Image (cartoon, rainbow, N blue to C red; front, top):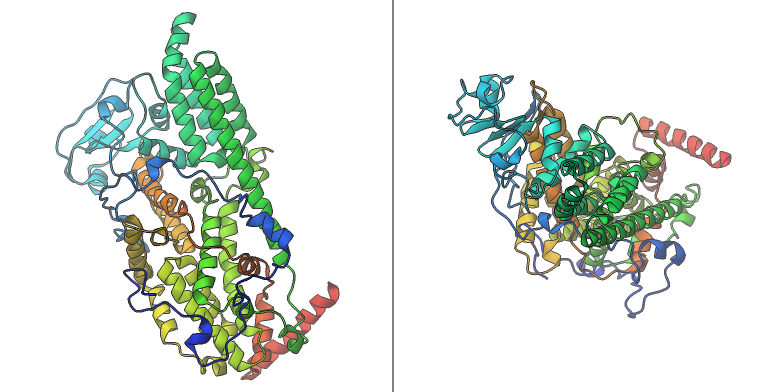
Length: 600
């Protein structure tokens, strides 16, 4: 088939591997049209059940989908003296990007404070910063805002009608709905995402619910009930957005208790809102149940994969072990199954996990409810999958006894990487390249001499880390643009190189102060964090359009892989040491691994 992406013109799709070369065709288990019974079916079914897949999850709020888009231009951010991240070339239209619009009219934004200072003077690099935020210098104001209209309303500062800084109390108040006000959805997402840098989600929810109730109190019980009935639907809407976008916050039993208390309070005033609260709670419980099933399935799969491969002392015997070509001989099919795994695991990463990777340590960290499970466990599991795939590739290459067989597997994985590139699966692509560049593989010079490396060099060029991965970022922009105009489910797939995404968010957080000199929270930074994470939400919601092959999936997630020491020893046994240093290394590895086997 022709290339499926605008940036894949250098490649054409691969035919089944045996047709790409003059090697004998390996036996395919699917030539007869029927699949053999998967090994360890009971373990695998728990993770990838077609009838009841725990990965079928509620999608992100429509607010963050691609229905409403407009062009967004990212500003240049100077993180520190040694790292400058310039304008993101991939800032193609964002789905309800937090920077697309302001948080509504400033006059309504701070509803309970009369504007104390309102500046409509044009801001320059030498004046007007005192009018906007008195504790900021004019030079700092000019660098941050440039030219435009700057104004302060109470403890909230705006520039060109966009919120740029505020006190924490003002931001919390701005989140609270009233009878005639509801916060902009982009603000809700942005503040709920990054507020955990400053206070615990439980504390935020408690304060928001308390303020919402207290604002309706007038001293007259009947009037209070009427007023709360009017605001209840908006409070339910806010809690619905919270539970659907950040459901993992509610693994904290205190959050669930607060939600239950609000349900009882709403029930006293508005039956319709009470029913909506019940439905919302049911969806939340279902989502958290699916998360628990997923985590148990991943743990079971990891336990199976932790089994060690056949003893390296008998390489001839270990060579009889099934390899990837005996499971799947079609690069495109294997790339499809890798994409299934990637999207399955992406779908369970909560957007807040990106922020919690560098959030301040919570003083309540020992609380038994919220911290029973790590706050970034799904993100860590996805990173571990990348590492496993890299080691699987290296294991498959180093395992075979014959040089010809090793060369065939290298060429096969090059073709798989090419298909991942065409699909838009950059994470698997980078994992394969990483595995093939590991020193136990790269030192196999006699094996590599039998391989045509032209396509591999092109793929390495696409993922070249120089210039801050500029080639990859260009390809990612192409995949994102294709996704936004997609005519098929396959064209919607964008799976980023995940470690680089985490790195980008990390440097954005580290390079920009969370608080300004006057104590205000730097909301410009929060906008940018939300912009990066909201793009991820769109990528993760894609449903994989390819058919599942359970036997291949089972192999990819459970087959044992070599450790780094075992890989080095397998490499030395494939192609002997070339110098005294390698001879000493082989001798040491043999002794160490033999001692380890005897102890176990």
